[in-house]
Image (cartoon, rainbow, N blue to C red):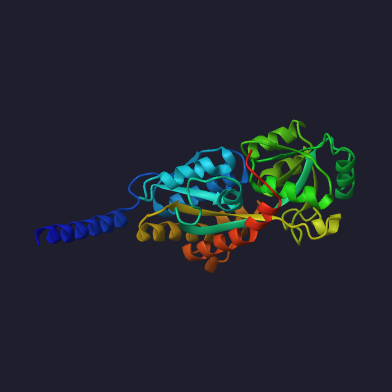
Amino acid sequence: MRKLFFAAACAVALQSATGVMAETYPSRPITMVVPNSVGGSTDVIARIMAQGMGEVLGQTIVVENTTGAGGTIGEGRIARSAPDGYTIGIGEWGTNVATGAIYPLRYDLMKDFEPVGLIATQPLLIVARKSMPASNLKELIAWLRVDTSKATVGNSGVGSPSHVAGILFEKVVGAHFTMVPYRGAGESTQALLAQQTDVMFNTVAVSVGQMRSGSIKVYAVTAKSRLAMAPDIPTTDEAGLPGFYFSFWHAFWAPKGTPKEIIAKLNDALVKTLANPVTRKKLIDLAQEIFPRDQQTPEALRAFQQAEIDKWWPIIKAANIKAE
């Protein structure tokens, strides 16, 4: 009887402690883990969101980049963190969908994280070094087919969106290139600027500055419609590669077991930040398409992520994309 009473008392005390923690949360700075390198679109979006969400929550959100192995090192850090709301993570299609079909993960993408909410989605740009002789996408494809033995395509790591897009592109155009993986979009972009690689599938968030300065060549956007902020860039349909579309999204997660009350506060901060005109303009200027309000819930993210896994894992496995 005493043991039963003690157990009940412990349960009540735990519930009370959880309630107090949720009521006072956050009482200190929050760490936002970015599984990709500095300078990539995930990093850029993370810093924009950290500023806005920190203002809503009344606490500083410190962005920390933990890179390597296609983002799996950073995601592993998030999965192992205390479920107290003081460590959250931003992830994307590559880190939270593709890696599950490519890497032997020590965590479960669907079971070891608590979804917070979707942020935005974006297409990729097909870009090349400034000295590339091709003046349009058809000419680029012809050049790649001729120089297939020495053509290099940089990417942000095995399993990253730029890597998978490059593999699919390779199959569509019927040529084989040397894929050069880097630790993230920042490093792979620097390699392209230094003309150490020939071609890359990069995000608008990363490429927009170089595009405007003329330091890279831009051939097409992997979307069905042109970008509002860069209407001169043709779509892949218009440029001669019909039906080649590729986009990827970003979202927030917390470690498994994070109290629902804390997830609700984080989600509220995300929703209010995405509704802020200043934040919206920053994201839209980077060609981000913000998810509608009804898709910004934890439940919507969970369903969306599962649907993406169901869609992409068979494609990735059929393409025989593996970690090396």
